[in-house]
Length: 337
Image (tube, rainbow, N blue to C red; front, side, top):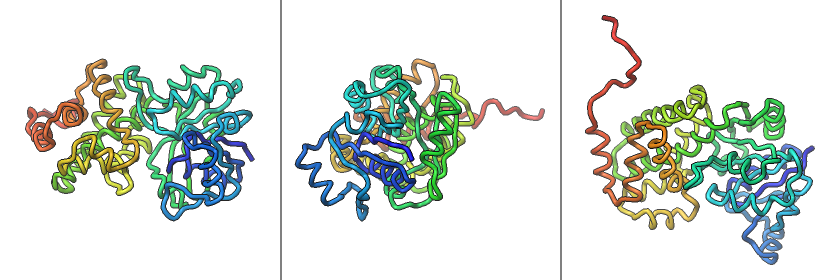
């Protein structure tokens, strides 16, 4: 049995808390924005942001960082990615040498272009940073529906430790050394999901969604290759796997926000309607900046940026994608002539 602290009592943090408690671990769940009276109410009613799911009694709920972090074997960062740095700064006084911190958030930091584990390593360099990612909607994980994910870590030892921590009969975990590729995929798939949702909102049908998924992973892989990531990562669970579920699922907040934008909502109206952090909106600018930095062509990411931040009409963005210059699907393929 391990002692695990989970930072963030939203839907994903709660789902992971339930999973780990069922795995036999002692779990503390931190809700950092709640006051003591609200925390006591959650303790009594065991309510969550997930419909029809209650927090199991053995999970301890707190709003104190010291309680959730100090002397824990592993700490899981499950707050939305825009809040990662502020959460780490509050955790820092209680993190011991080589304590394992696993990020379960997906997104790149605006301005710095750092991924989640890089932010951990910058803020708490004495911690052992790693990442959990893959096609894993909280609504399904919390109900014990079969799910597969991947853990990325700096060492095989840490990866296998976390694999054993999370793995269960309904939650299969693979390991990988390619942390950067895993995190790039997790960030950029949300941007592509905004595009896929927008196409749904425009009423464009399934053909274009399949195209956006396929060409979207090609963009992410091109960018990843320029950044030194392993190409296998983009064909795996954290790459194409997570992209498919985020573009297609009714649980996807990024797809839903895109759908509303396709229906004529402004970005601000769509985010308010979703009523959760839409991480693709934050990652879109980072994707554009990375594309410029590494001189990689990413037309879908570019059009998403123009819709989000430059008031471009979604139908015009789609038309521009369709009418781009003719080209081969893969320019490395050669004719037998």
